[in-house]
Amino acid sequence: MTRVETRHAIHPDQARTMGTEELRRHFHVADLFADGEIRLVYTHYDRVVVGAAVPKGNDLVLDKVEVTKTSTFLERRELGIVNIGDPGTVSAGGQTHELDRGDVLYVGMGSGPVTFSGGGRYYLVSAPAHRSCPTRLIRPADSREVNLGELETSNKRTINQFIHPEVIESCQLTMGYTTLHGGSCWNTMPAHVHDRRMEAYLYFNLDKDQRVFHLMGEPTETRHLVVKNEEGAISPPWSIHAGAGTGSYSFVWAMAGENTDFTDMDMVAMETIR
Image (cartoon, rainbow, N blue to C red; front, side, top):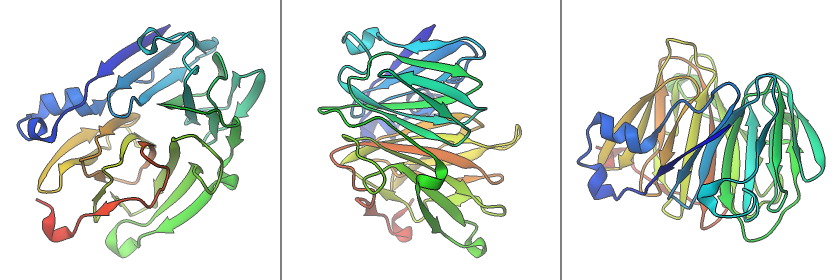
């Protein structure tokens, strides 16, 4: 079973007027992980799709999705997959890949149906593509690791870059995840925006009663979303994206848009944020 929801793009002027429930309806992503289902959210931000597949003992196939109006989902798209669950397999383009927890699979345009099996909890991000790049499995040891922050400022974290120009070739999708170290809770502060790319987040590795306050909005008109484990946020190009949790956590980040330059960002001075 595949379920698809559509999210339309929101102008920043409109976002300024939104209350909590309206903000959550447009930018908060919940209930992606459902046993025996593929659930997708089709956004009008660079036509990025976020979703999840949870086989739970039965194969799930991502093939034709009506909203894309193509014969197969990947006919003109590329796909990034992160397994945040138990080991499983993903098959595409005549190849089967074994994904352990934390592994990332990049699937190139034109790979045909994608089959999810085993005990995995697969988080999915897809972007339109104009050329096909080789499908490749990237394990954490093969990712580009960047360590940032300090315990003294509560933001010591490790960034693992998987779908990234210095790791593998993709068309426009970049993807990886960040892990906060014990005793740290802040990420991406001072904040930034990148007007040339949208971004999507999935927060995971949170205990049941933990929450992350995801900061969004224009730098001078900030808003927030409260998210729990395995929930996410859609971040428009005009929005900051930072957060603080009630404990340590991890989050998957993915971007698509004008370029794949991870450092292409417009920094926001602390005195500017309101």
